[in-house]
Length: 541
Image 1: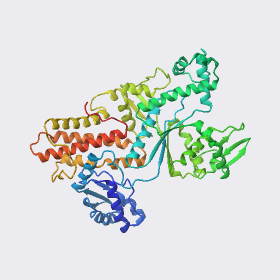
Image 2 (image 1 turned 90 degrees about the vertical axis):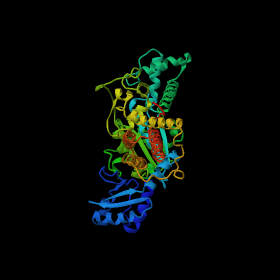
Image 3 (image 1 turned 120 degrees about the horizontal axis):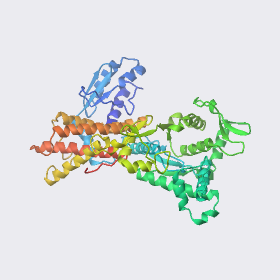
Image 4 (image 1 turned 60 degrees about the vertical axis):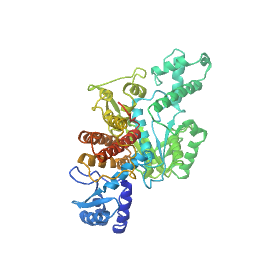
């Protein structure tokens, strides 16, 4: 049973009974363990405020209507106003058959939103290696993009490359100094990676300008950024260069747009944005757009870039590190002045990643000195562990990354625990093939819906059915941690099934087929779920 299909049908009933009180897209809750139901709806409690009726009265009326929806076996209203829904076994198994038959598209919503979302993340200055915190942002943005697309929602990804401005100049000055055997300036770049780049320079670099040194450094470092994110299984649809911004004169055009909207004023020879006058009311002071010398500030360039993004997408999601938290209010005010609705611009701030080993803090970096590079972490613990660990926590919580745990090949390691289930299922099918058991066609056209299910089979089927709704929750709250938690829970439910329901040792062919069907659905959903957070699903371990 596709939950969004049920939500659509339920909303048709609600429209006739309670106009104006529709179910939201992600309205379904997991029922308590002691309740025999597949879905628990708390909707009536919220609707009571709109309809001005007791929640339980609303729930009873709705439950009677919901019970008539195709695929619903029962709908019961319980205090204080929950509606517990149980699907028919045929509806439940139809959803699982879809997962087996069409792994790529079975998660698509029936009527996905048409708005295009543009996610911008990492966007680290190409003046040094990508650090571990950038990896957390990369994992978050890439996972969200994958989840949006799996639901059928258009999503693009972008990396903003700062190849202009002061930092661009400083990396060139620092590289030139190292090439000449000198120390970089105090505010320059001190890392060993600058020394290594200097060794790559040709002899003719003695005749280069600082601009050429900057161009060389940015080119080399951007190559490493692209290689690192590719190896981290992150794909960007576009690498947008700041130089493109200036070539198209977008900063000036954005400034003119703000002036035309009467959002600027002049003071002390500079052009200011009246940030505190904006309705967002979040920024605490006005901001300079153009300095006294006529040069645009970073803020104006950033507004120009975001204005360009708004011309290419309906909704913007920016993923920034914790040190950018104070920058959020001015961007919200600036975009509001450019006509962007508040609900169309979201900023996710991801917190720090702390490495520990045996309970003690760890410093791993040799090349960068002051921070751990993403490459070092990938090489040490592997991409799978990195991606799963990063996906397992909400962005706004600090992450203590346990290196020893990430390397363990045991059920203590959460990513191993989930991957092992997929590998175990594949081994079951290899054994079934060797013994000519079962066959491989699990479409409902050739497979009868079971009349009876053991408790562990029922629990597994119900858990598998929650996959799509889990993705809905990820998209709604902009966090893949629901998916990581779901996969861990699903692995636990499968282990209970496997320990209590022998698959290939049964003499009853129908029981073997039923359990092979549940195994096939489990493998399809685990494989899809792991892929959505950038983790592999091995066939053997």
